[in-house]
Length: 291
Ligand SMILES: [Fe+2]
Image (cartoon, rainbow, N blue to C red):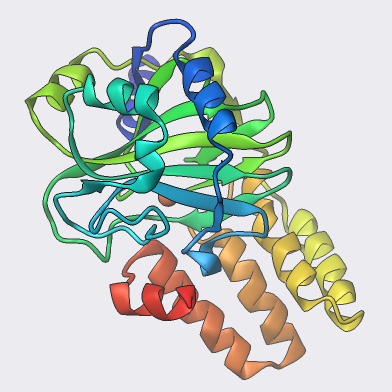
């Protein structure tokens, strides 16, 4: 039993960890700078992957354009957004990381990212995603491996977004994170040696019963029949934040709703989304959906 617990917490550490504590007040310095810059936030490029209320801007991008937020392998250039944020630029510079891309991601109240993996459309250079929470609240979570975890301020966090299915939900006021996609270099390897995760930061999600899912499906069907198709889909996708599903379980529920409705095209669409979200995405699909 003991070794099983150790094994499972070790597994969780490879999914998410705090790499280091940043100097106290770092998040506030960045947050104040962002607020003063009065940024022109853009809709999140990965529109199929998110609810309403998710916005993004690039700090480092392939062409130096802050509105270009569809990531790809590159040696990035500073954007006009980063040029407005000199203190933030200095904080990022001092990390000594090999950046592929850097974004600001904003989740408004109740905004979320559906369950997915990242990077399957990219090349196979070793990379990891780091987060610096800039502005956050106790009800903003990442979800992975059937648990929810709040990333606290003044921390540099590591997420392994390719190997672990994850999602995010913000049940409070606006949440802003800096999201850094990094090629793994010696500095990052050294940071990982000191990574840390406190068990008290993790909360277990409920194991769902068949009755739980039937209940959600009945409610979703009612919404669909009341001409609220998007709300019906979202009700089912949001089960990811409250239940410890099997992988792809929230996407399967949407497919199941359309199966019950006899909507074959929608069944196929959600089957293909499940494959793209969890296994294999392409840059072409993302570009087409982002228009
Ligand atoms: Fe992700």
